[in-house]
Image (cartoon, rainbow, N blue to C red; front, side, top):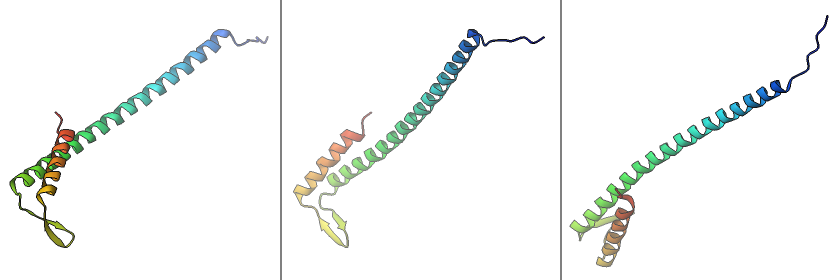
Length: 102
């Protein structure tokens, strides 16, 4: 005696639920990976900002303390004019404002 069984609607519903769960799991994994990548980018930005902050502070300190300093440009050594020195000091201050946020 053969028994014929027809697929029930509950089997279809179970497959649909399983597929939805699989999709949610895949979405969740993707969200975790994106969050991890974002955290890594933020950490790298923080390190870069700290390096830029330190460099800008050092530049400002040198420009302030050593007003008559020689700078090497290619094979030549040049002195900054007072106008250029003030301009570079302002650039260093602007970089400090940008990169030294606490």
